[in-house]
Image 1 (cartoon, protein in one colour):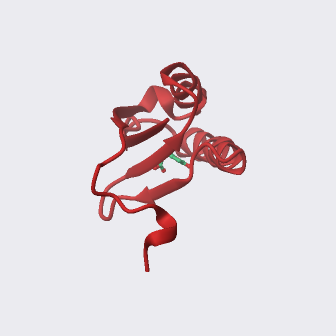
Image 2: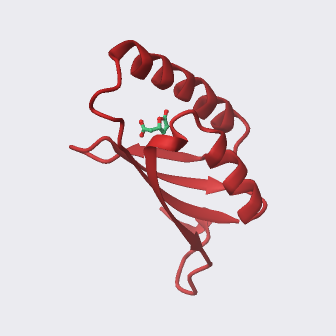
Length: 97
Ligand SMILES: O=C(O)C[C@H]1C=CC(=O)O1
C-alpha cells in the first residue's frame, strides 16, 4: 500500500544544539535504513520549510505507524498521512515516456 506522508518538524526552540544534532543524526540513520528496505521510495524536502513530503510503500496502516513511530524525531513532528489508491487515468510506468 502506498501512503503520502507529510512531516513537519517542530523542535523546541530551547532544545540544546547538541541534543538536536544527535537526534538528527539518529533520524538520518533510521530513515536511510527504511529507504534501503524499499519502504520509503520518495523523500523530498519542502522548499523553505523544515518539512518533507514522502511516499511510503508498506503492507498496511500498522506497518506505516510502526515505521513512523520508530523515527527519533517522531515526538517532534506533526505528521499527516494520506492513503493512496489507483487513479483510473494513470498510465502504467512502462507506458510513459
Ligand atoms: O528532515 C526531515 O524532514 C525529518 C526527517 C525525515 C527524514 C529525516 O531524515 O529526517
